[in-house]
Length: 132
Image (cartoon, rainbow, N blue to C red; front, side, top):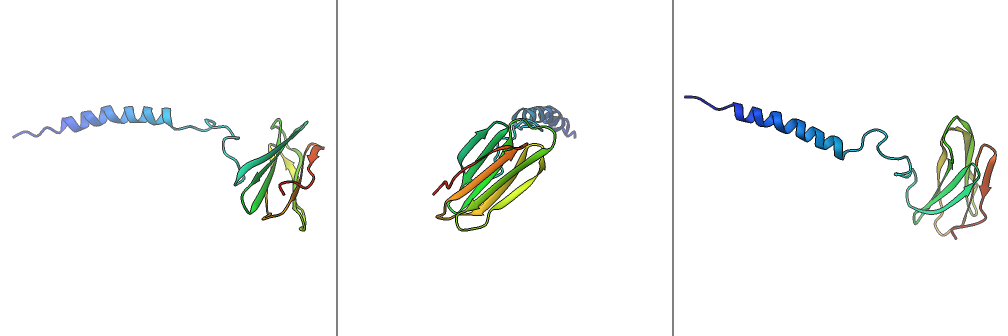
């Protein structure tokens, strides 16, 4: 009596490389997706305010507002800051030397206006009271 154990092995030898190649084609590798593909803030993008060295991005959910300052050209570490202040509260500030972005900052702003500022390498922008 003989048993045929060669057929499953042949099938496995053919399927494993095929499935591996398919996985490499379908799954993004490191660097396969851009940094802008996924936001670091929750909510929907509300405003993007561009300035000479970068941009200030604001996101909003029903209860919260989030802000990020992003450099136009990522590179060496340089002074960057982002500030977010809901009306009637103290401002929240994140400053330092960053290579790509400052933030994210999130504040509770249910039914409140907010004021935001952002700067990269000494140049920046500020808003008045917005998102009221």
